[in-house]
Length: 430
Image (cartoon, rainbow, N blue to C red; front, side, top):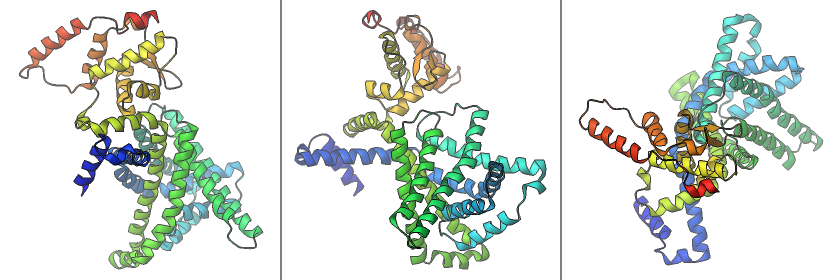
């Protein structure tokens, strides 16, 4: 079946189906392209594996994070009533009805835990567990956007501190507002009492998409990705409770695991929760790079060899030349999105080349995360790019292996032929 569908898709992309010439046929093909792009990216980014990893770290770090967050929020003037509201709302959000037993256990832990009795080592351990979860989330967001982590430890700690203090308050504001709206409506649950928590949850997710990846993300991409996650989250809560009730998951787990039967159900819910969050990040990435990704998918659909195409030194020459020519035209630094659109290449391929050339000292990244030549383009030769790629991006082999001298002689001859400036006379005069 999948082979048949793939064959139909390839024939449609190649214009071999009559229906694709109509307006509706073209629209359906574009939707298919978009679905294929998102599905391929989700597989490439291993969303299912990342969600499992984050579910595990959430289980490990959840209690330390709660304790740390409330300890840091108390100096901000948090009252006991507000603290209880925040705690209950977060528990309802994280547990989401997956198991009442866990809510009771966590409530007892929070009631008895006290930072004052932990000592320096205990507090340090709590912060360590909490920051590990943050580091894993930050890494997942940056990997989905195809960028490396470039923040200093101080910057990462600042974002972590802001997240565990302002995040819970932001989410609790939604819960408090929803409760007040319900009271004003005479205890009746209204549209606004349901919508307000959704808006505050979406705001937290939007801010996460905006700040966590080590790359500039537009507000448009963050808004669409954050709202998508928030809506999917609300749907998932109801769907998960219905699933566990319909199939008797809780009772089955109690029979198998006894008093720990709530744990597998909770882990399954955390997996669903993180999968929903990461899907929103994936959507934000595609909104940010929609045009080059769709152009690349249209080419992929008609290119049987696209799967194995990867950037190499010659592709790096294209990228370096495009950046240099834009710089000489007086148009300033080049962004990844501009280069992807200009070269009609995948953003992650462009980003890989940019990382290599920055490490090689041929490119410099600006504060806006755009790229400019590290020195005047006339002083950069094509062989410099090839050499940098060989040194930093080609697998290292033993020099004594068969054919090593032949390869070295050939590369030497190639570098001799490329001992010329990247910028042609036309670009220089421009």
